[in-house]
Every structure is written in C-alpha cells, then in structure tokens.
Length: 124
Image 1 (cartoon, helix red, strand yellow):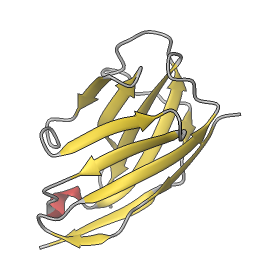
Image 2 (tube, rainbow, N blue to C red):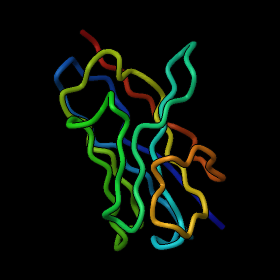
Image 3 (cartoon, helix red, strand yellow):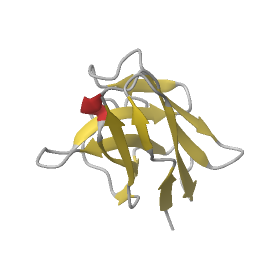
Image 4 (cartoon, one colour):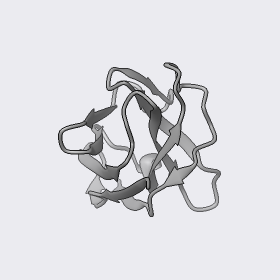
C-alpha cells in the first residue's frame, strides 16, 4: 500500500531556504513517478518538480535554479530543497506518486497517491 507523509514546512523570510521531506512506502523507483505540487489559497494546484529513477527530473519554470528534487531510496524519502525563497512560493506543498513505468514524468498531471501536505510561508 502506497503511503506518503510530508514534513519540513515552516515560515521563513525572503531569500531563505527549506528542505521538505516526504516519507514513502511501497513506491519503487523504476515503476513510480514522484512529484511535488503546491497550492496557494485561491489558486489552482501547480506542479513543482518530478523525479523518476532518481536522476530524471523536471521543474516548473518558476522554480528552476532554486529548487531541487531528490530521492533517497535507502531512507524511502523524497526531498525538495528550496533555496532563494520568494513570497510567491507560499503554499501548501504536497508529495505525490503514481504508477508510471516509463522514463519521462515531466508531462504527467494525474497522480494516484497524495500526502496530507505541509505549509510553507515566505514573508517579505
């Protein structure tokens, strides 16, 4: 059974950094895409980053060069390192996973499993 649980959200000032974690179970690297999404109040959910096979990654233009997605299979944990944070990064961040046995997750929008979310607030 796939389970996802995020942690690491916090309140930081502009320019600060945070690392979000997502502890997972039953998500094999070569069969599942994993991703981070975010949703700000009053806005649609936005894909932030995806990862497959630990090395194939993709990012939304709004976070390229600032955020890094990674996966530690030994710890069964997905990470999102967020640097140079901006107020517009303020949102609830969600970890997601879905069965997808191909390499390229970058266009995938439908995910079958979701965590409960962790709040990130960036103040100016």
